[in-house]
Length: 580
Image 1 (cartoon, rainbow, N blue to C red):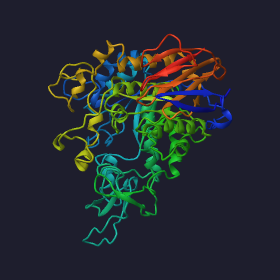
Image 2 (image 1 turned 60 degrees about the horizontal axis):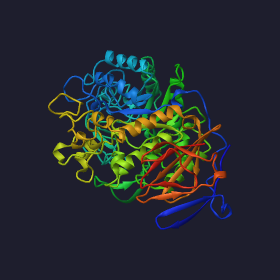
Image 3 (image 1 turned 90 degrees about the vertical axis):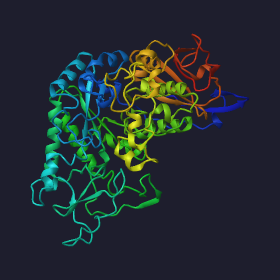
Image 4 (image 1 turned 30 degrees about the horizontal axis):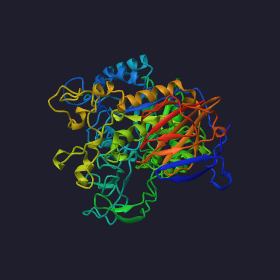
């Protein structure tokens, strides 16, 4: 059963009164919703995924760098928190230019993180705690130190030459290399073409120079990468997060990309990646990857890094149910401000989209500043962090948390270019400080090493905020961000409406994002005040599936029951109520 409601707003002083149904004929109707949402027993429909950046989660051997044994020692923490799966960013052998995203061997473990035996033990111990392990599948490029590329660049007639994208330059002569083949730009600045003196051609790299792109038009590349999937599936992983999936193909005719106004942080002209992003052949690869993993039991899942330009483009990643189960929703993640109208608009688009796919929501990851900073106002950041936790964990979809998010970890950028690790920070300083700030060590306690390491110095500095925002301190504080997450994660497992319910947007208030989760006779109403002023909502009894609202969670003190006729929301309050 779908609910349709209309609202009229009257503002008196600082309070807002909403009367539902009274003036339905004059108020706008909510966006039409899809007729049904798919359901199924697959584990990932109800899972909470937790991203771990392995360098920064737990150091077990005192070298200042996190490792696999360290992750294993923290599985009980993750289980008690309520985590169902961990996505671990790359742990494969790598020169470390892009900290693991430049892979030199897809079928091994970097000794920096441990051994294959350590990995097998991690998978086994996670399984005992009903936690699944998701690997990062870096599908677009390899390291320039990978044996495939070393062979490819050894000569023009090497059998692996066509495993990468090589082209002659413009105006090349016997003595002059000429200009790059076209104007394509690297995501990290400058030309996307790198001259190779030995074989006198350019190779293409969407990202760093040290990350040459694989040529996905070569069937041998498909065969090799399918073998990588088989290798890890046989070791017990439960799926893959596919990196940079939209960049797999480029225009074979090398048309120039159109320029846009202005310049980026690296001083380059802004450009539209028209001929290097989202080519139709990407979907052929996604179907192929799905076929490979579907050979294995346990409902393996595919998550994609799909920063598509809009919800409609994002939903194409589902295919006809034969591509990806969980495309990461960058539209929601990148709103970057508390805006009830904008959240309402995008969630309505997602719920009414004809693909009917399972959404995958997140607000922080290893490539973007942490949500504590992006959504905070500098005064109420902790309150807003709890509000964002409610938004992430009570909407219909699979939530993806980033390590330390549950503590209110903040972005701690380097203050000097000499301290920067991330190459884009070195290249773009000071406009671009890189991604070190969101990758600092996990804050377990208030010790000098934050419980992360016994080394005198961690690979990235321990943020000053670790003295207050850490697991040890916050677990003892009932009002902490950590305990807010823990209560909300428990609610997801115990409330049928939050597990299986459809999501119905309620109202069009400029400051309050409200939605109903409903399944069968169970209904949960979520109210999020995204403003710094008190708001009061008034519901008529006949307009809700019950006459009483019983708080399940409130970021502010709340009575044991609330009358729908008068729901007072303090500034930045987040309230989850059962409708009875």
